[in-house]
Length: 564
Image (cartoon, rainbow, N blue to C red; front, side, top):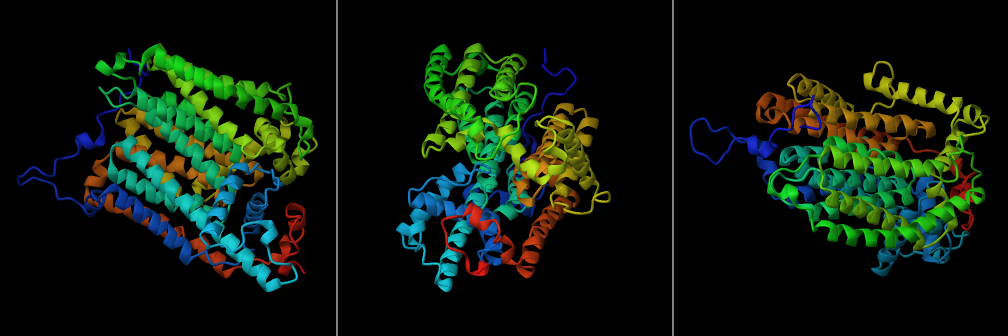
């Protein structure tokens, strides 16, 4: 009996339904330019996409003065220099820890090959030499922007590659990669240094890895590969959390996505269990060995609640101190069990899969111990209180007086965020801050409606779920003021929703007229992606506006030339 009685099972993959262009005959369809481009070697397509992203940043944004995006460029570069001297972390807002590890390694590498003269705080020129100081920081920030280009390109290329296997259509995967590369999020992230980039990349790729793991090819035993994908997914979620705790919201949607997108195995391979109980026992032992010290770090963070660098507000209802953290862990466990029951996963494989996720997550959290600082563990363990600190700074009148995180002020702001998010989708009701990827969302909505009317209701629900998660994240992020860079979390979901729809209606790419409209929409996104960077190059801010907070966040550097 189907787990979704009201929904039509997915049809065969796109590639199996497309006409064979190699067969002779007068009725053979003519391959479009898109077909010919998509038929090129995949590595070449990925290289071309990465090159286009790099060229876009080099032409617009890379050479801007180092102080244009002082928050966060200067703070993150400063921490790369701190780590270069072996000094402890000073910034814990996100908490940013994962990014600091990466920027430290990046600066060391560039310094070792002679491309970066300064890679530590002690090597900075004296503050009295304004010209040398400006030159040093310009080089440091441009090195950080180069890292952002590499990271955004790696994100887009990996995203497209995973979609290629998930959708079974190279054309759709390529278009999705282009849309993500030139969406709001990555175009903002690629031109500055931000902790959101690593966090969003990790958690989004974790989602795609899990979707690949729960949709095994029919008739093939991919148990071992699925376990590896699940472990990698867990690892990326852990790394996303130690970089920026906002990743937890998307991570909590992964169990629901696994349930909605999962596919029960059929054929001879369905009865195998990737090594059976022996593999499950081995993975469980490894997971426990990693989880014990990892959860010890989280316990240390819970115990340090009162020592947080920013005073925390209780969640309310007795949920602080491990309460809501237990709920989140239970949510994941229930998600695994329900997925196993709905999709009839063998008990041994289910146990092995749960152990693989736990192993990866624990290893990701153990990264906190590479350069231990209690404040990082406190932020990760108490992520709700940590995020509330900065929401209360922005909405002081509504939040600071309620005495706990859960309250009328928080609910009112969330409802306002939901209203703002929905109003933006109409353009008319909220004409400001319209993302260029809104046409992607409209396409996904229209496509989901068509699929529903065709009886393919499960595919429609899957596409709508991805959109709802993206909108929910945008509403939550509005508590801190939704910034363009935050779209790195939401754009991938909107693009995946549209790609999911398009892969189930391949006739739109096979027919000239709808294909032209789709390609025109993609071109419009690419062109619109350069509007704001172009405005930035002609509307430089006054750097002196940063001089009030720089001494607080960067106490070990001399005043910048623009602050004298």
